[in-house]
Image (spheres, rainbow, N blue to C red):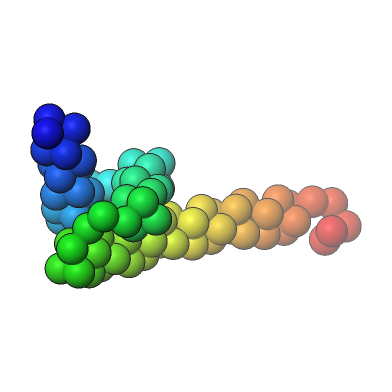
Length: 89
């Protein structure tokens, strides 16, 4: 019984919205992995599954924003390095 209550609390925690701006990449990724695990394990009601899915979509968008930002920073650093190289390389 206690294990079932603990699982229920984990589902609620994973589905609970968190301000996206406050999430770092690793936190969002880990939360997304938890959501995926819960969905794969099953045992949730349709409503809980939908809430988990929606939360997973939000977390995936947060991760993608972080990855896009990292790519932009890398591209800018590479462009600056190429622009500063002798011979225009």
